[in-house]
Length: 194
Image (cartoon, rainbow, N blue to C red; front, side, top):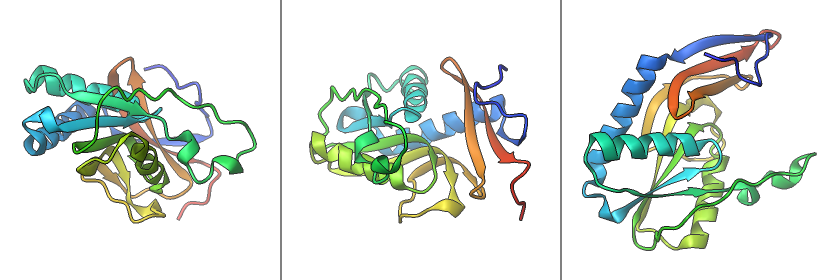
C-alpha cells in the first residue's frame, strides 16, 4: 500500500477495516440497499463530491454485477457552495463537478458519503439536492459513522462501521483505484489523549 500524499509520521494510526473487512462491509451495505430498493426503477443513488464518489462507484458496480439489479440510476452532487462554512475559509474553494443526468422528482434518493462526521455536509447536500427536484424520500448511506461528533440531528439509514472517534482523530479511507483497501483512524501523537 502506498503512503498517502498527506502522510504525516507524527500521526498514530489504527486500522479500523483491513482489505477483507472493507470487502465484507461493502457487500453488507449492498445487501441492505438491495433489500429496501428492489426493484431499482424508483431509486437514484447520489454520491457527495468529492469523497463519496468512489464509494458510490463501488456500490453501483457491486450491485449491478453481483446482485443483478440492472442499471442503477446515479449521479454526483457537489455541495461546496451550499456549505454553511464556505465563506469562513482563508483560501478559495474549488468545486467538484456535479453530474446529475438523472431525474429525482418523486423518486427515492440515497445520498452516499464516505464518513458522517458533524452532519453539515449532509445538510448542505439536502439543500443542493433541492435544485434538482423534490424526491419522494431521501436516505443516507455512509461507510463510517463517527457518532461522537454530530452537530446536527442527522443519522445514517445505512452505515458500514460505527466509530467512537474524538475530535482530534481523523478517519481516512485508502483507495487503490476503485478498490477500497483499508480504513484508518489517525490521531496526532501530540494531541491530548483522553
